[in-house]
Image: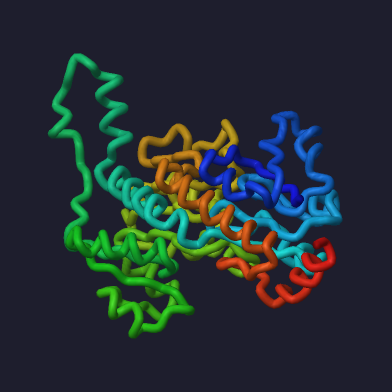
Length: 330
């Protein structure tokens, strides 16, 4: 019988997928010192918000697979896992709809200045000329610039087009023809997109190449008064540079579901700004999104524990090594 260590409580229907195949241990204790107490002997990890480097992976010599509950796997040391012949999986389809809808919610909340309007209503409950003072942004006819045109970016683009926005995208891995088929114009460089878009929205993974992709220099290329949305990863943005751009009045508003670090420090000045909508990385946190993500995570683990190639394996090249280790455990 295999052992699965999970960071998330599994719904009964998904836990049942392991019946006769594996026992389930977790979620872990809240005490950080005891977090990995039950990890030794585990063959699989349901990886949620934790960081899984070599030190954690080495706690179980039996480990076959680390399966992430989401698209990003930047908190898993893929190189270390591959060296130990451990499969790393993610769930690229799971969070798509919920996260895309959340990015659009951030866009609308930022453009319509909902945080400012609500704050005014709370501060002045006896009334004032709110209509005269409020100055929101109409998005119809404006240009949305998508940085990244994967699953989430495409869904955001589709809805934005339906709202009457023009949509352009920068993604070196998507051809201009493929973008055009979606009604989206491909822009050859990030600099060109930043200078053209009225709204910039990030939809790409965090890697060594994309860390601080949005720097002070890049922010300076954006149109004065442009909106900036990020529901991907906080590390994509040089946060002090973003704060400086806000304080200089260069941006019209910012909507963030991610920060660096997470959660933001209490002294982060963005928490006090009415032109910043800031949420705690909950973009995919809907009932449907959570279940879809966990279902795909469990399916990947079940496949590996049955000696079958999982649907979403990040380090695919080492699969034969994983399979040989699996066969030796049978």
